[in-house]
Image (tube, rainbow, N blue to C red; front, top):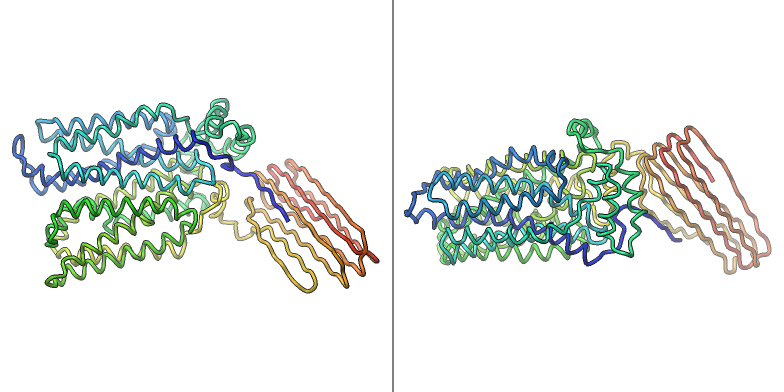
Length: 583
């Protein structure tokens, strides 16, 4: 048995494609460096050259980015659809570079806040743009690994900021961070626009050029373009009102809410607080090592394990890695919290080790996988709006925890605070266990149909062979919405000698509704001897309504010894409604 399935994203991996993916994913360096910059705040508080920074102002410098990102995450999707992902990415790099330089050389305190606001605006756009761009530009073969690169870059950005804060004055560390967006401007100019966005805008010639650049000379550009055109030409995202209508549909709302819950629970579990306030945490914990050294160790641990995730997600799958790492993160936080609360003499190393393991586990799964799922599970008809809603909710949770963390820690103690955060993190694992599906190896089109409210009517393409009272079953994924394909082959043989059954089924369905194909072939053979049957059925159907075709074939062979049955069924259907085919 052989099955050939053609779907969007099934094209060769090229050097250019990898270069473009690396360039786009490097945008998360902006995100990481913005979060890691908070490590300079203790040094900034000690520098009274131009102004004095209080603890409340530290809290606002940390949390103001979340407030800004709450607002701009709602408009980032609309701007993406208006300007295009690539063009908006270029503008964000310019804005980010200017914000870093403004903070580094300002003589006035209020310009610190202005710079942080500009930085947050730029990052708001980056986190909306990057994962969908990677999902749309990458081949299915490498999409999992490619989707982890932004999180790797985010971890690298945090580590770079930690190192700069440790070894250079705060203003020099800030100025050096501007090198990141300035350097990224040049390669971003050569990145092609998203072919999905171009198709949704009806710019097919530009989409063809973009696909040609991504796929290289060995890719079938016209085939890929035809798949995208049939799938997305009617799913325009130029209007947010259209996306709100689409979001009301269960198949679009369910994955958005699921991904949103993972992001919110991850943030409420203290992920950002543990990064941003790491120096303060280690100072209060009384760790024997220098707090800045501990902070660098945290950044290294996260970076190393995030790199490992790039190789594990396509091999082990998203779901099992997410479940295990979320559980480990929760347990590590609880252990650290208990030891911090008990303040056992000589055991100050336990919270440090627990938090290092937390950071490693976070980098391996809990950190990158929600971002991967954002690019994979949010349906194309609501991709910009869905990503905006998810990021809006994420930043509300981020602001809440980052602003309140120091106050809660002062009120109830660091130990209780970290323990409660661990329980919240563990609840994210429960959500993943109950509802998150496995997305490894599935095309974006298949994933968009996973949460269809009528998927319960769907069946899998199953081939069953009975031979000499032995049963063999092969189940294949069905690429349809509200579609069932059942192929059953039976071979009953008495005293057979060299008999075989070959069944090949190819299915290509676009915009199909409530259609079914049933193919049944029966071969009854007694003492078979040198005979064969080859049957081929082809059906091409466009816009049929309530049509049916019923064909039954039976073959009885006697005195044959080398018999074979080959049945090939090919169905190509477009815009089919309530049609049934039985062969």
